[in-house]
Image 1 (tube, rainbow, N blue to C red):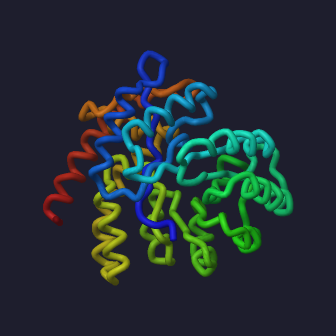
Image 2: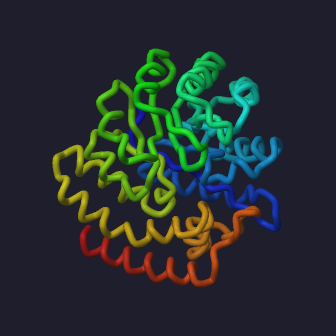
Length: 290
């Protein structure tokens, strides 16, 4: 079972280049927190805006710090299934814990085409594959009936679900369901989800893990109260294109710089101030509830 909080780690930049030092400091910071593993080169890592050499630089830098202490899952996306298969075959030489793979973007295949796509992905590797259902980015949904067929393949083990309406049905299938929509995290857990791949884990990894534990121990009301304290910050994180918000939040205490890669614009001065205030309020509320 794939469970717990997975951190889709950001890719820090400095003067337009991948900031290796900041990335490694950030990875070291989360090794002491309640995460199950890292997801590198995901949406929050601005992977679509990195070239091949930069993607390898991110992985190399991450593995130098993480080693075998935590699992590293790698995001793979794009339009052409064949290119994605080739990338997976190249990455398979690394000690990768699995792949987070989306449906082909832009081309909008039907469900038969989506099933073919993931069949090809699963055949390309023996490592675990996590389906990534993110229709607002790809243009297509992975329907529950398609997931039911795909999990006949032994290495398709989980799904990152970003559509709350699908949580209930997905959780009835023999597959781990990880929430990919930060503000619906508790709803996913209550439906039977096993955790989340959440941008907000950069700020609240331990709290999100505690919320999970409270749901598992039938203290759902407590979990909801804790999560309500996080919601104003989560809303601000996604008030600008991801990951501008979370980078701005991390920059408040100097963890990384707030630089993003164009055409994703850096968070505005207004958003940065709103985040500072919201984080301060949130942390004070959490201190009282602890």
